[in-house]
Amino acid sequence: MEYDKKKVVILGGGYGGLMTAVTLQKRVHPSRVEIYLVNKNDYHYFTTKVHEAGAGTVNPNSIKMPIQELIDPKRVTFIQDEVTGLDIERKKVICKNQIITYDYVVVGIGGTPKTFNIPGLEEHAFFLFNWEGSNRLRKHIEEKFQEFSQKPTGKLNLVIGGTGFTGMEFIHELTKSIPLLCKEYKVVPNDVNIIVIEPNQQILQGFPESIVSDAVGSLRKMGIEYKVGMQVTKVERDKVFLQDGTEIQSDTFIWAGGVTGNPLLEGHGFELLDGRVKVDEYCEVPDVSDVYVIGDASVSFNEKGQPYPPTAQIAIQQGQYCAYNIAMKVYGQPAKPFHYIYRGTVMSLGKGNATGIVYDHHINGKFAALMKWVIEMRYCFMLGGLSLVRKHWKD
Ligand SMILES: Cc1cc2nc3c(=O)[nH]c(=O)nc-3n(C[C@H](O)[C@H](O)[C@H](O)COP(=O)(O)OP(=O)(O)OC[C@H]3O[C@@H](n4cnc5c(N)ncnc54)[C@H](O)[C@@H]3O)c2cc1C
Image 1 (cartoon, protein in one colour):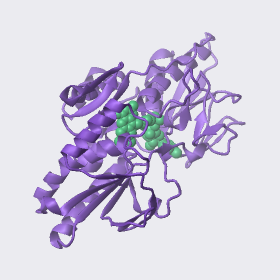
Image 2 (cartoon, rainbow, N blue to C red; image 1 turned 180 degrees about the vertical axis):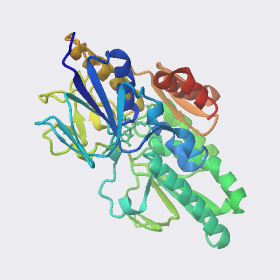
Image 3 (cartoon, rainbow, N blue to C red; image 1 turned 90 degrees about the horizontal axis):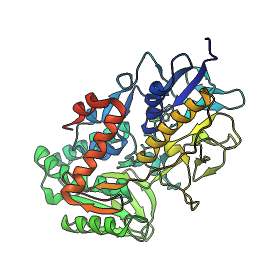
Image 4 (spheres, helix red, strand yellow; image 1 turned 90 degrees about the vertical axis):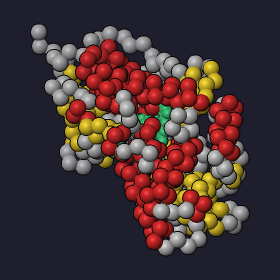
């Protein structure tokens, strides 16, 4: 029997998009759908490990994988291109090099760093956000150590703005890499400063008390000081200005001030919250036909109407859900609404140490670090089975 084949176009090969593609290729018979995956790079990377690549504690190449090796190329056509717009009236995706028509589009292009319009931030700060950015940061830190070793005057200042999840993980990673860099470039460890600025009144604002307390304890143990309630007002190539008039000499400024939605999704009439597209309980844009938005580009809400924070955990579940939902549409079946299962949060505090809440239980230390690794391996298993787990076992 001949079926009307549907064309599913997935935008973004991150946690959400890739999970949609690999689930869809298993769930729907080839006679019923054509699957296309569009991503600007030819690789997928572990965003949850970019802080390690940025600090230089892991080889950056170990956190990225060719997309072609993760999908079934007989089922999914991979297109390396940059999405520049959407034409939802005509059901078209506009890319730099082509226009792609769709029956269903799944938008998983992630968010962008929040810059709060701070002058100079975009030009001079480094962002821990994607693979390219973390790689650039690692190279820059190495260059600064090299320069300093040749002209050791004053201090080598590494300044971090923002102590949310990403900032906190990065600070801890940096404390592991600095002794190695000092040894390699023959820099006296006491000449290197880590300066941490938090615009909120508390570090890790919004996180459970047990996680905050473990993280604060860990910073104290390492002798890292931080200023809270201090806004960054301007950034220059080698200076960071604070609201109280302080000027900090900065060799490297890393901004970890949070994530907002993707500007590509503005101007389509989608309802936005903090730049993220509000989606309904089917991960679809209300009143727009066949447009799903998932992961950091979207915002969905719990039963109390509160927005879920953007995490890989929710992006992965939404990706699996979209594949299921599209399968139901293709087979003419009613779909159940998306139900997010929150399993917990585990934050790395450097190699062999972490803190978190898993299924309502507070965990920390080596056990929490082991849990973090288990979570990463579980993701590898979901994505590429045992062979991918084996590949990343030691990283
Ligand atoms: C340092 C750090 C640590 C984190 N740790 C955790 C953690 O422990 N647990 C957790 O749950 N979450 C964690 N997160 C958050 C998590 O990484 C994100 O929520 C998650 O990556 C969102 O997935 P996504 O699929 O929406 O977007 P992404 O994973 O960002 O993927 C978006 C993809 O779209 C591509 N893309 C973007 N724009 C375009 C375009 N115009 N055209 C084509 N392709 C495009 C990108 O190249 C990328 O491949 C962490 C984040 C960071 C930065």
